[in-house]
Length: 126
Image (cartoon, rainbow, N blue to C red; front, side, top):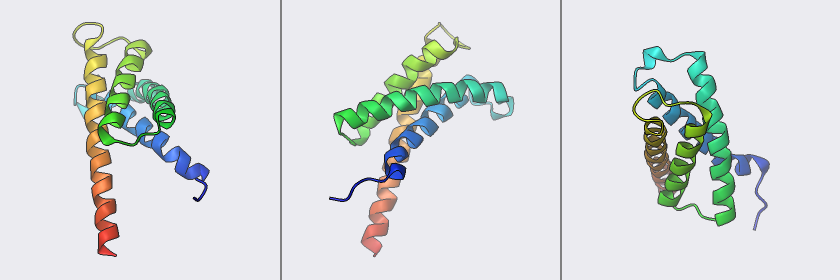
């Protein structure tokens, strides 16, 4: 079996970081992309970096790549990290964190499923 390159090892982390950060950004501004600022990006990237790292380590230790497990782990870690990184902008103290976690889980599931679909399609076309 071929050894994984560093690039291959970092792919899941980069994916989880992007999904968590994106979910946090969208939730913080409640979908109003015109309200995005560098401050929002800084806070969202803190959440994404920490949640992405925790999710990548957790999933590597668990040795799983099942889409629903990946999505749940990323959603839960994003919600917990978001709760501690910054105060919620709407609802109770935990409302924004929960919505952010749910958004990260859904985004992760959709992106992961789409990537797998197009990879399979490309392989079957060859």
